Image 1 (cartoon, rainbow, N blue to C red):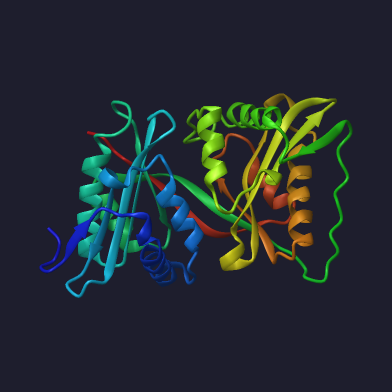
Image 2 (image 1 turned 180 degrees about the horizontal axis):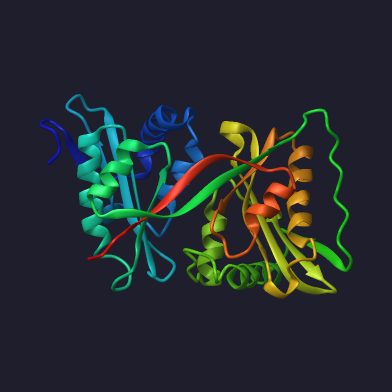
Length: 311
């Protein structure tokens, strides 16, 4: 039960500012900074994977202040279900976890795993998740490299036989990027297949992405690698962000991933960014963490993925 005098309703896109303020406040209490922008929230509320009319919750206290936000929704073709809860009130946290979990069980394919992400330092939400049957199953690191504001951007030297094609490009280039992502990530934890139309539509709607941020790497004229970047951390930390970086298995070990990373770094330096960030699965089936560390990136934040343990 919610505390006496508290109320809830479904979210609407007009709630973006209030949810952003709540998220920034909660994150700052836990990790020391907002780790969220208004654009992040607007993009989340506009994501077609989440149906606000049935799968979102906005909680207000007796004085009318927004004190909790939760949502759930299937990913890909329903092979997985995501769930998230934002609040600093333990009572609201327990109610949101229970309510959103009950809805999540109805979504996706039968038996689809239900996931949520939690900062390692978030003791309150971790305790509530555990009480509702979740357990940590994977660890992700937020990686960062700082850029010298006085440095001059220098384009990296391409490995032998490697050339880049950069967007916006035409539909053929974007379809190539999509195919490379689906193939290079298919063995990764949490991977779900997305159709080209779904993937393209999602990126097209993101306020911090445009198609000039898509890069395809070719080895001897054959597409083997893909990079997407975005401005998702520009507003709050003046950082560029690597969204996806994938190289086909048969082309790994040739320095292509490092070349793509350094290409992203050079673009961020030219844009005056203070750094470049990305997220990496610590248990990745490829040596991705080692690759990122080898080019100067370091972990700055730990986020655990928790999974509901179906009885």
